[in-house]
Length: 153
Image (cartoon, rainbow, N blue to C red; front, side, top):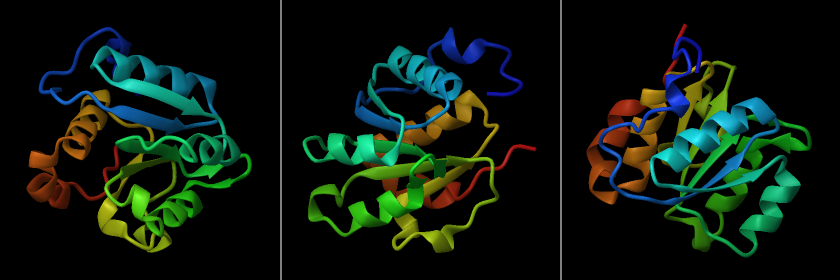
Protein backbone atom coordinates (compact mmCIF):
# COMPACT_ATOMS: atom_id res chain seq x y z
CA UNK A 1 0.00 0.00 0.00
CA UNK A 2 2.49 2.62 1.04
CA UNK A 3 4.88 3.49 -1.74
CA UNK A 4 2.62 2.07 -4.45
CA UNK A 5 1.50 5.60 -5.39
CA UNK A 6 -1.99 4.50 -6.39
CA UNK A 7 -0.91 1.79 -8.83
CA UNK A 8 -2.48 -0.97 -6.74
CA UNK A 9 -6.05 -0.19 -7.76
CA UNK A 10 -5.41 0.74 -11.38
CA UNK A 11 -3.43 -2.15 -12.78
CA UNK A 12 -3.84 -5.88 -13.07
CA UNK A 13 -1.04 -7.85 -11.45
CA UNK A 14 0.45 -10.40 -13.90
CA UNK A 15 0.31 -14.10 -13.09
CA UNK A 16 -3.21 -14.05 -11.64
CA UNK A 17 -4.86 -17.07 -13.24
CA UNK A 18 -7.10 -18.70 -10.64
CA UNK A 19 -10.16 -16.60 -9.74
CA UNK A 20 -11.34 -17.33 -6.21
CA UNK A 21 -13.90 -16.35 -3.59
CA UNK A 22 -12.08 -14.31 -0.95
CA UNK A 23 -13.35 -13.15 2.43
CA UNK A 24 -11.81 -9.95 3.80
CA UNK A 25 -12.23 -9.24 7.50
CA UNK A 26 -11.15 -5.64 7.94
CA UNK A 27 -12.59 -2.83 10.05
CA UNK A 28 -10.74 -0.05 8.20
CA UNK A 29 -12.85 1.19 5.28
CA UNK A 30 -9.83 2.54 3.40
CA UNK A 31 -7.83 -0.70 3.63
CA UNK A 32 -10.90 -2.79 2.76
CA UNK A 33 -11.56 -0.60 -0.29
CA UNK A 34 -7.98 -0.98 -1.52
CA UNK A 35 -8.08 -4.76 -1.03
CA UNK A 36 -11.48 -5.04 -2.74
CA UNK A 37 -10.39 -3.05 -5.79
CA UNK A 38 -7.10 -4.89 -6.10
CA UNK A 39 -8.64 -8.34 -5.76
CA UNK A 40 -11.66 -7.76 -8.01
CA UNK A 41 -9.44 -6.22 -10.72
CA UNK A 42 -7.58 -9.51 -10.70
CA UNK A 43 -10.73 -11.58 -11.19
CA UNK A 44 -11.59 -12.55 -7.63
CA UNK A 45 -14.98 -12.37 -5.94
CA UNK A 46 -14.71 -10.47 -2.66
CA UNK A 47 -16.92 -10.41 0.42
CA UNK A 48 -16.03 -7.97 3.18
CA UNK A 49 -16.92 -8.32 6.85
CA UNK A 50 -16.13 -5.56 9.33
CA UNK A 51 -15.76 -7.79 12.39
CA UNK A 52 -15.60 -11.38 13.61
CA UNK A 53 -19.36 -11.59 14.25
CA UNK A 54 -20.14 -10.73 10.62
CA UNK A 55 -17.45 -13.16 9.45
CA UNK A 56 -18.80 -16.03 11.56
CA UNK A 57 -22.29 -15.41 10.19
CA UNK A 58 -20.98 -15.40 6.60
CA UNK A 59 -18.83 -18.50 7.13
CA UNK A 60 -21.79 -20.44 8.53
CA UNK A 61 -23.13 -20.56 4.97
CA UNK A 62 -20.06 -20.00 2.76
CA UNK A 63 -16.62 -21.50 2.31
CA UNK A 64 -14.30 -19.09 0.49
CA UNK A 65 -10.98 -20.26 -0.89
CA UNK A 66 -9.06 -17.59 1.01
CA UNK A 67 -9.58 -15.53 4.13
CA UNK A 68 -7.66 -12.28 4.55
CA UNK A 69 -8.04 -10.85 8.04
CA UNK A 70 -6.76 -7.98 10.08
CA UNK A 71 -5.29 -9.20 13.38
CA UNK A 72 -7.00 -6.70 15.68
CA UNK A 73 -10.71 -6.28 15.08
CA UNK A 74 -13.42 -4.47 17.08
CA UNK A 75 -14.81 -7.68 18.59
CA UNK A 76 -11.69 -9.83 18.91
CA UNK A 77 -8.59 -11.07 17.12
CA UNK A 78 -8.36 -12.58 13.65
CA UNK A 79 -6.14 -15.40 14.91
CA UNK A 80 -8.92 -16.62 17.22
CA UNK A 81 -11.28 -17.06 14.27
CA UNK A 82 -8.56 -18.75 12.23
CA UNK A 83 -7.90 -21.24 15.04
CA UNK A 84 -11.65 -21.94 15.30
CA UNK A 85 -11.84 -22.61 11.56
CA UNK A 86 -8.86 -24.97 11.60
CA UNK A 87 -10.80 -27.21 14.01
CA UNK A 88 -13.60 -27.61 11.45
CA UNK A 89 -13.13 -30.07 8.60
CA UNK A 90 -15.17 -27.84 6.27
CA UNK A 91 -12.44 -25.21 6.28
CA UNK A 92 -9.44 -27.54 6.17
CA UNK A 93 -8.41 -26.47 2.67
CA UNK A 94 -9.01 -22.73 3.17
CA UNK A 95 -5.85 -20.64 3.15
CA UNK A 96 -5.52 -17.63 5.41
CA UNK A 97 -3.54 -14.42 5.41
CA UNK A 98 -3.22 -12.12 8.41
CA UNK A 99 -2.57 -8.45 7.70
CA UNK A 100 -1.19 -6.57 10.67
CA UNK A 101 0.97 -3.66 11.66
CA UNK A 102 2.42 -5.93 14.38
CA UNK A 103 5.52 -8.06 14.02
CA UNK A 104 4.75 -11.67 13.05
CA UNK A 105 4.00 -14.10 15.87
CA UNK A 106 3.11 -17.47 14.39
CA UNK A 107 2.76 -18.93 17.91
CA UNK A 108 -0.76 -17.45 17.86
CA UNK A 109 -1.92 -20.15 15.45
CA UNK A 110 -2.71 -23.83 15.96
CA UNK A 111 -1.61 -24.54 12.36
CA UNK A 112 0.91 -21.86 11.39
CA UNK A 113 1.76 -23.71 8.17
CA UNK A 114 -1.69 -22.75 6.84
CA UNK A 115 -1.36 -19.06 7.64
CA UNK A 116 0.71 -16.27 6.16
CA UNK A 117 1.44 -13.05 8.00
CA UNK A 118 1.92 -9.91 5.97
CA UNK A 119 2.97 -6.78 7.82
CA UNK A 120 1.31 -3.46 6.96
CA UNK A 121 2.23 -1.45 5.01
CA UNK A 122 2.73 -3.98 2.23
CA UNK A 123 3.41 -3.81 -1.48
CA UNK A 124 0.36 -4.63 -3.59
CA UNK A 125 2.39 -6.85 -5.92
CA UNK A 126 3.63 -8.91 -2.96
CA UNK A 127 0.11 -9.34 -1.58
CA UNK A 128 -1.20 -10.42 -4.98
CA UNK A 129 1.63 -12.94 -5.35
CA UNK A 130 0.74 -14.43 -1.96
CA UNK A 131 -2.95 -14.52 -2.95
CA UNK A 132 -2.05 -16.24 -6.23
CA UNK A 133 -0.02 -18.88 -4.41
CA UNK A 134 -2.74 -19.36 -1.79
CA UNK A 135 -5.51 -20.01 -4.31
CA UNK A 136 -3.47 -21.95 -6.89
CA UNK A 137 -3.11 -25.54 -5.67
CA UNK A 138 -0.15 -26.23 -7.99
CA UNK A 139 1.81 -23.37 -6.43
CA UNK A 140 1.02 -24.03 -2.77
CA UNK A 141 3.46 -26.82 -2.02
CA UNK A 142 6.77 -25.17 -2.80
CA UNK A 143 6.14 -21.46 -2.83
CA UNK A 144 4.15 -21.19 0.42
CA UNK A 145 7.05 -22.67 2.35
CA UNK A 146 9.37 -20.00 0.96
CA UNK A 147 7.14 -17.06 1.87
CA UNK A 148 6.89 -16.93 5.64
CA UNK A 149 6.19 -13.50 7.06
CA UNK A 150 6.79 -10.43 4.95
CA UNK A 151 7.80 -7.18 6.52
CA UNK A 152 8.22 -3.92 4.61
CA UNK A 153 9.94 -1.20 6.60
